[in-house]
Image 1 (cartoon, one colour):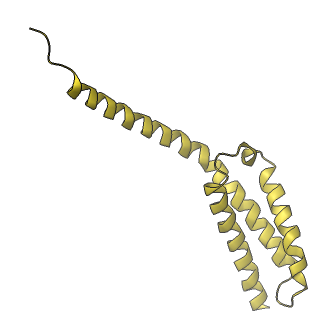
Image 2 (cartoon, rainbow, N blue to C red):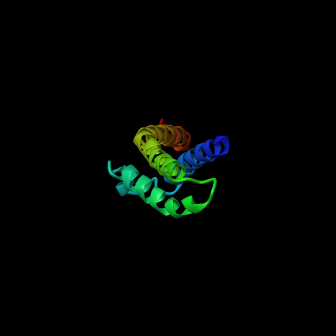
Image 3 (cartoon, rainbow, N blue to C red):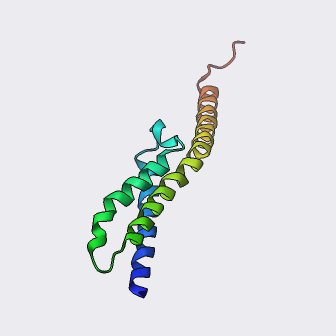
Length: 114
């Protein structure tokens, strides 16, 4: 019983962290991932794919459900954070480029005419 609980916790954590990393790195610019139904669809699909593995003695149907829940939460987590990070990153990049251009422009200007 304790082994089954540990396997379920590992499935939940693995699904969450794997989906979170995949969503942050690969699906960052995909607009469909921001749809409210995307985490639900991802979680149900992951649970349905993991369901046949439940015939093994240690892995149960609840382990497959925990995996689906972890994937759904992992997909939902970065989507709420990405727009904020994107806006602040763009703002910081814009300020950095603006400062660099301004400082470079000051050095390249010809001396004033007498």
